[in-house]
Image (tube, rainbow, N blue to C red; front, side):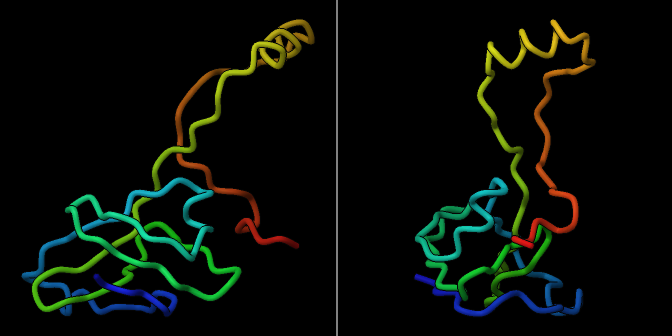
Length: 112
């Protein structure tokens, strides 16, 4: 099992040439949970043991092995439909739409 204990750092594209790309597809909340075991899209078991307060950014390279590397992908944030909120917004004449998208908080999402 690969154990990741450091935040991602810049990786030269040449260091990834010829290696298979594997990914962790994570929602916004999951990209903030930095101590857990996960399975990559390629089926590899990975343990994250990153410093408290770390946030994994989409595109970050978490690990580079001899024949593969691991990148972070942003998965859309799923928010359940809230009938009461839908009714309220419609009653107030607010324009809104349902859609699925990657959540990217304004200001980087820090706990300022």
